[in-house]
Length: 325
Image (cartoon, rainbow, N blue to C red; front, side, top):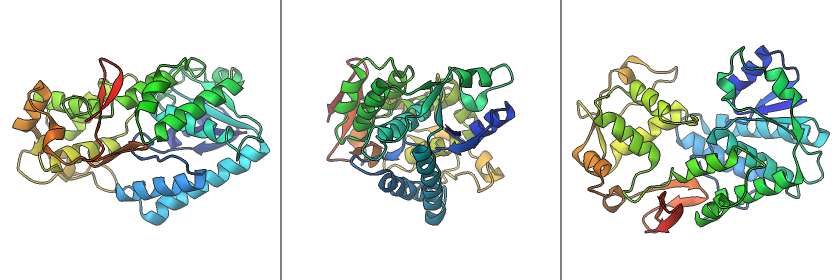
């Protein structure tokens, strides 16, 4: 039996709970960076490895080796049968789930034994002895045809070059995958709003305007605004870096320096000593008196959508629709 989870920490939690079998971390921040349509699993992994490398999280060789090893273990087990997918409510897990299930519903995976799905209503990586993980496993069910079809439609929407596909999926009945709708709604909020900032950026500005300035504390406070949490600190630091290094920055360092990312072995003294400040423009954008998109050159991917000056899409949460600017 191969247990697929969202990361090494979740694997360790399962092992500590006495769950037997083999364990595989899917481990990809699919909510960030390019996830273009029409690619095989191997081709997608190459795109994702390149993105991970350019984020500075691994060398090109390390990133590609990770994805190739992961895919090889998955494909071997999928052909043999006995794959169990653990799924928690956060966005991070929902994107993993639809990628995996859409593969099973593709020509490549259609003849394989369907996987089993374990739904856990809490963050798996934070599970404690109070959570009965063996009982969760006992309640697993074979993925149904309806679940495979919904996952394929959601994956198609995620990877589409037009985000209105995502909005269309959100109008459907997705209850057979009970955490999917809330996850995709949170993904929609990663698009700029009508003031040119996404939800994560807005939360950061709000925290800074309240007087917090230490990066670690800003991350902590931002996590508390998410229910459930989904973004790791490595992705979060790049959001802050983007807001600092923009041609029209929303955040500045108190000493006027560049934002320093944590060291290779975690938060070092240089990182911890930084003090973040909201700029005048940041305050105006937060108050709704300015639009960040009107003053900078956006270059960012959300799923299959490349946001750039010729292709700007905003999420209108009030009307639950995407608007092209």
